[in-house]
Length: 622
Ligand code: ADP
Ligand code: MG
Image (cartoon, rainbow, N blue to C red; front, side):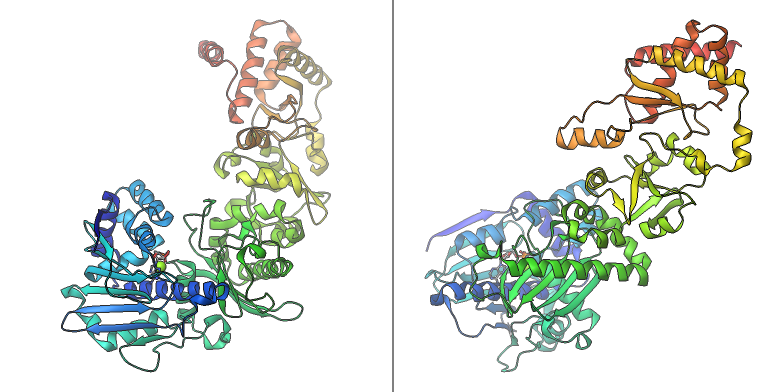
């Protein structure tokens, strides 16, 4: 018998140590993990046997047996099994993407306390065995093979793998229990854990030689809603979603009519670690008439709902459909559409019923959902219904578009927004001043995705989205009459402003397309805006970074605040002597300031610093 000893990487050893000694206060979960794996293995073989009848085995089952003398607990299934390579790959390496990502996160978290919280988010599956066992032996034969293999490990240093003399069908996992885990030698304890965590498993689970399974052994999603408890839903979600949090939303329904399917879908509370990983697995599982087909159907769930977990069980698809055939199947497309509508309407209902829960959802997944605004035009209206944004209507308060519209001013027929890096930076933008002063609400759009969907979806219920940092917006029409009269300026003052404008235009002609008087500003002297026909300034930056794409270069416009003391002073100076050298420096300083607040670098930092110092010196001398 050829035997091979392999060691775990240091990372795995450390991980196992954490798992075995500190992770769960509740050790029961190891059994849930092993039963969950055994049930998955049965599901996989059931599907393979559809394609290859030689693999067909009898009834699937999971058997749990204990040996009080040897102090062992065994979990046996007649599922797909593992060959040597599978054992190494699945049980012995850190290469499994989840584990690798988890270790990465643990490293980054540094301190062990944080690390533990993180591991809780990932779960450790098979490794959970080492919480209760100081040795684990896995005997397994892959369906279709003749050779069985034995894998054995103390969960610390490494593992042995060898050809096994005993033949088995499926997998048997033997746990050599630690002294502290003696209660798992009691049948009552085992039963109670199965009922608590694994009742929803569709494969029957037997304890000892009992003829009656401990669990209900029917597909949970086929049971009627009022027979399922919240805990059962949650446990099922843990199993099916490989998740460890509470679902924030559970949707369970049966679609009848042209296409028939049952769906039991969950939205996690926590963002899965692989949300942006293109190789992510554990997507929604597709069943056909209770038979697991795959969890890798690309078109079953839109990419912008990729955080949804659960089961869809179709009555219409043929059982022997190959996974490849599913990609372009019209039934799959119809299911996708129905599922999308339902999820979006359930989310809208959640927002009504429990706004706090909904906001938690939105903070976790809003930026992903918004991908749908350009990806799925047919669902755009429903997506808009659940979109939330920060706005000038209150610090860190989310608003819906519907509420925004209800607050629109008389005469306002556009939805104002501002794009930027983050809400904090956006809040201080000078371009908002004039809107704030007139009580006009502006939405803050700070997710990268916002720059993209705005190019595709440019209106909501007939109201155009308009950037407040672009083009000219006539805000004076929102002004009260008194305000307008108060503003009327002396003709003299107007003239000097005109002179200043021409001085600035001349000095800055290389940098800006135009200098003009602003109605956006109340407190700041200047700001930049994009040309009417140009691309929004923040969007331009995002496009450059994300897509390496240089939008058509339209020069920015510098707007000045003719009510600002500094601008008035400069206008006076310009009227007296439009060639005064201080004016040139002032022009550059104003422009540089406008760039800085926009998050753009100044053209020439050393000149900026020199000019600034000179102005300060002069100011202090005066
Ligand atoms: P996960 O179930 O999240 O993939 P686990 O650590 O629980 O992670 O299991 C790792 C892998 O080992 C599984 O994905 C599966 O491929 C394999 N595996 C575990 N238990 C069994 C089993 N009883 N039969 C067949 N394969 C198994
Ligand atoms: Mg597992």
